[in-house]
Length: 303
Ligand SMILES: [Cu+2]
Image 1 (cartoon, rainbow, N blue to C red):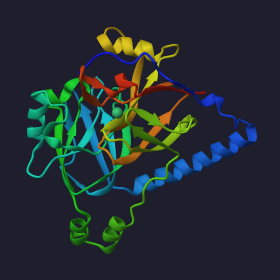
Image 2 (image 1 turned 90 degrees about the vertical axis):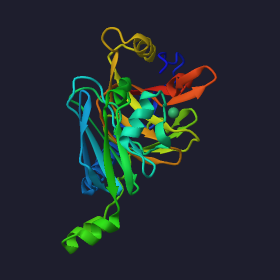
Image 3 (image 1 turned 45 degrees about the vertical axis):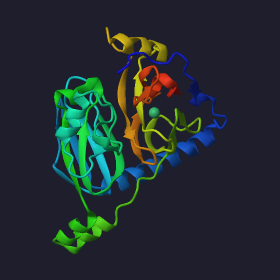
Image 4 (image 1 turned 90 degrees about the horizontal axis):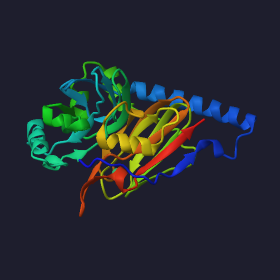
């Protein structure tokens, strides 16, 4: 993949919000806290697919219920990892996907990207909710092309009806019926090639972002917390060589979503500057470029 990042980064300052009277802020904080808590509760009711990443493999269940699913990546490795959830065409295996990746295909076997937990640093975790259709999925780490070293796993999403018919109690069957989508605290649309959102979409503390791909291309939303005093330009320069300590670290995100796909992204953010990028590759006349290099990047300041 290409190795430079954009130099022109729009800056969005949450502190410029005009509605910063103490009373208003307190009310908003209270409302956000409540809605985030409700969202957490709703998400907790959903089936959980826990993925553990090591260097360089995944440990994950072989089966999950189709429908709205909470997917949590725990990084027990020593380097950054991510977990793309991509639907394999009928009859196609994760091994075929890996073979395609090794052959240089950026989007192997026409798999359909369903999102998944974005890139996180060692010992950190990343969580999303997405709706899985019944079928076979690959869990893939594209960070540093780990997939080519075998960092891929396979999960079957089993249809709701199959689960209900095999449920041993009516309570279990009802549980399969009563899943509720998380309540979001904000929305980000992924377009070709920019993030579209309100200026105050992210705030300190718990965020539940609804992320929708309304573009014609696949997109992701990967978030890096910049070290104090470091800029997006610093990050781009470091990324080009990967020499020395990185000027920021990944704190999660929504992995690549195919057009018209969506999901919810859980983020717990302390104050600081965040670099938001789309790391999805695009074949262009100049070779393959990351969307971040095509302008799909911005800095959000949380104060
Ligand atoms: Cu993109």
